[in-house]
Each structure stands twice: as structure tokens, then as C-alpha cells.
Length: 212
Image (cartoon, one colour):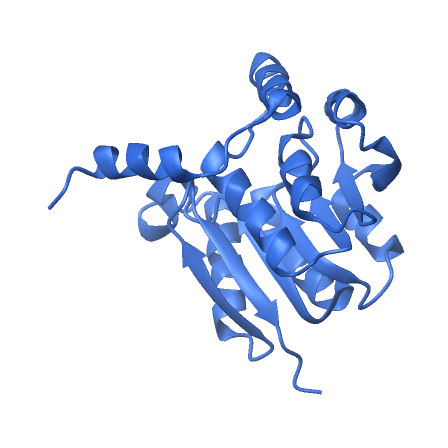
């Protein structure tokens, strides 16, 4: 079998690269100790935005704006990203990233706990819901995502493998259990057709196909 690291390096070389606003956003995130998706995961986000011709995206967890920039690069030029962040300092860094990229007019930035902000968003109005916030709350985010997505919309979630901890029965902390419940919830839901991509820390992608 070929060396896994060699394959990963090869695939990164083929993936869409970062532009200057993305590199700057990643650097600021690292400096502030804010987790950011790896570039190969960002390329997946951009691809899915392009493939769905997304005009409306909800991002649960702005971070430093890095993943939001990937989405905006693939969305319809008139599309709007609604991004939710609980930490005001993180939100400020995200807004800086959006300003540097010249996309501030295409971003609606909400500050507050996700479970308080999500009920304010309109039903069946979004092409994509991206989950990348408190892992223990992923099951609750799933319920909101189903309400927010239009039929045919796409749910995306990051960190669903959690460094392999979700597959270890000896690990039972709150975050890991939340991710397990989320993954099981998507798998068992007849309205969602999904799979997990072994990219980065695991990306779950599911299409919302309501039966009624």
C-alpha cells in the first residue's frame, strides 16, 4: 500500500490553493489559537458551494473567517453568508477577513450562542448549513439544520471523526458523545442522505430530502 502521507501530500498539491485573504485569515486564526479547517477541507466547502449554486449559507461557528471565505469563493456572486459566532474577539477577526477580501456586503454576522441565534433564521430558506461549533451541541444543531434547509439543501459538518475518538468506545466525554449522537442521527434520519469524507478531521455531507 502506498504511504498515506505521500498520498495526502499529492492530493493537497491538486487541491485549490489559498489566496492572500485566506492565508492572512489562517495566520490570524493560528495566532489567536482559533481552530480552522485545513485547506483541503476548505476546498471541499468551496466545491460544494459551487456544485449547489449556493445563494444562502448558514455557518455555525465563524472562527476567524477562514471557512467563510472558502464558502464565499464558491457561492453565487450575489449570495449571502450568515455566520454565527459566540466570541466577540473571534467575530472581529472574521469581519477583518471579510473586509480584506472585499466581501463584507455579502456577510450577515450574528453574535451570540448558536442555539439562541438559530431560531431567528427563516425556515426552508438556506442552500447549505455548515456546522463547526460546540461539539456537544451538534445534535441540537442538526434539528435546526433540518428546519433551515430547503429541500435538496446540503448539511455539512466538520470534525465528525474527532481525531478518531468517535470510534473509540473507551472515550465518553461530552463532546465525543455529542458527535456520536450527531453522526448516528444523520445516518438514521430518513430525510437525510449522507456520508462522511475522511478529509481533515472528517467532513459529514448530507442532502436534505424531506419525505413530506
